[in-house]
Image 1 (cartoon, rainbow, N blue to C red):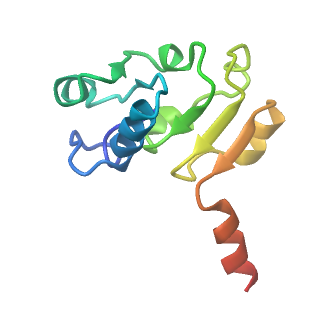
Image 2: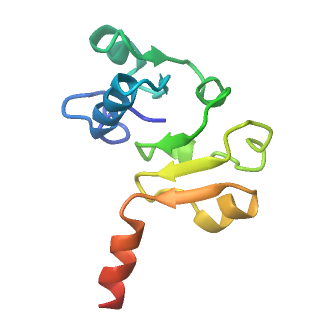
Length: 123
């Protein structure tokens, strides 16, 4: 979820989200990308990636959900309503989801840098 380098920007230049998507695709993963503003750009510049029009399409049969851009529509996702999907792991790369809410809905919620962040706070 998310391909632009930040929300409300219709730009994919230097997008870490697309770098991760491409690395995963090259490693053999089936990657589905959704972004509210740059789907057409992704299709044009990254034809090897599958771009979907609605977030639910990205989740269909997925092993993991990665939220890579903190769009308000992603932070507003209801983890309970998504509970029917086979996906039960979410990687919150932007620290934009409420971990308590997602874990209460039965999701394995992980954040990038989570362990380093805690270690720095404790030091």
